Image 1 (spheres, one colour):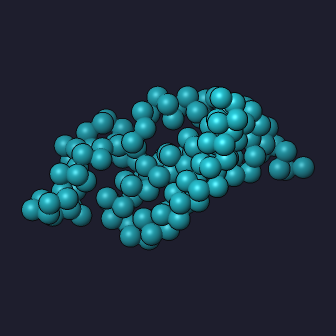
Image 2 (cartoon, rainbow, N blue to C red; image 1 turned 90 degrees about the vertical axis):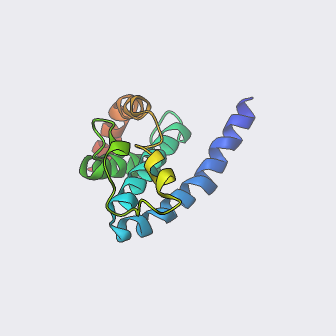
Length: 135
């Protein structure tokens, strides 16, 4: 079981994380509300994956993902009240067959409590990592 978990963590970091990172430039360059919402979800998933895959000590990729996600979500995640589906998205044509799918995407695709638990659980390690970079 431990070998399978280690193999999964390795695959996530070698395949899934780079794929998620590759989507970010296009989403942020697009600049539409829908693209920024999707970029928020990608940042959230990157932070979650890196924090769960790096082991007990943070390394540079995990620390960077946590910091980038926290900054990006603080700037662009506007679904604090959970009403994303209720707000009309000016970038989506209501007659488009994909409009319902875009509206159904909702927030980050992760429970916010899970993401908060990751940041809380990794806070001390992230601070240690940052302090170690200043030496």
